[in-house]
Each structure stands twice: as structure tokens, then as C-alpha cells.
Length: 155
Image (cartoon, rainbow, N blue to C red):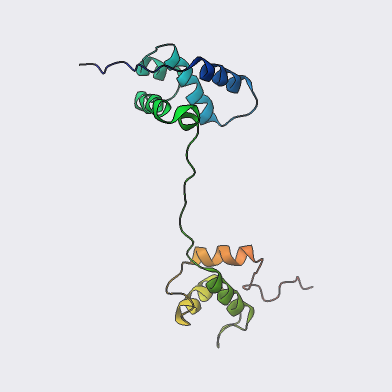
């Protein structure tokens, strides 16, 4: 048995706004594809028919239609802001690691390396655990290159 067709009424005002969006300047590709799909839904095309013309799956087109009904035009075209991952280090931990890197390296080491900074930060209990990439990015943001013997070029 086939799925029932979508009965989504796109308001005339929204259709006009969609056409203006498509004629306008630069937009994200996914926004343009969603706008095209909504215009096709306004013309009572089914999701599989639209999927043949626009490179979006029928399921995504159905979800787009339902999102339009629930959240309106902006909710259908644009995604909500995602929170992203929480920061691994807080400000005091970052400052302590930077201060450690600015000091002399441990006994028996000529200079700091990213691995050495990671190991020492955990050993000195500045942080419970931390990855090398986190340390690398932290040093990069502070323009520190402690693995160089000197931060200048010698003759």
C-alpha cells in the first residue's frame, strides 16, 4: 500500500517569499533545495515525484513538509543552532597550562612537546585528563611553539 500524499498548503505569501529567495543572492545549497521542494509541495506534487527532480530523499521531503506545518517557513528552511561539544578546559586550567609551557621543561628534556605538555598537565594535576589535540589547539591559539629551541631563526 502506498503512502498517503502530503496535503501541505503553502501560503501564497510564503510562496512569494520562496521565489524571492530563489531569485535573490547567494544562499546555502540546502536552503535552496528546501525552498524548491516547498514550492513543489505547494503545487501538490508527491514526495517521490519531487525526489526525482530535486536531490532530496522522499522521507526528507515529508519531514520538510511537516516542519513547515509546525514551525512555519523559517523553521522549514533553516536549522536550529546546535550547541556543539562542551569545552574540555576551563579558563583557569588553560592559564595554568600556558604558564607551565612558558616555564622551563622538566629535568632531562630539552624542550616542551605537545605530548610532554599533555603528560605533565595530568601529572601535575592541572587537569584530570586531556588529549593532545586539545593541547595543540590551545597552544596554537596562544601562538606558542615550545617545541622549537628558540622561536627565532638562527643563522
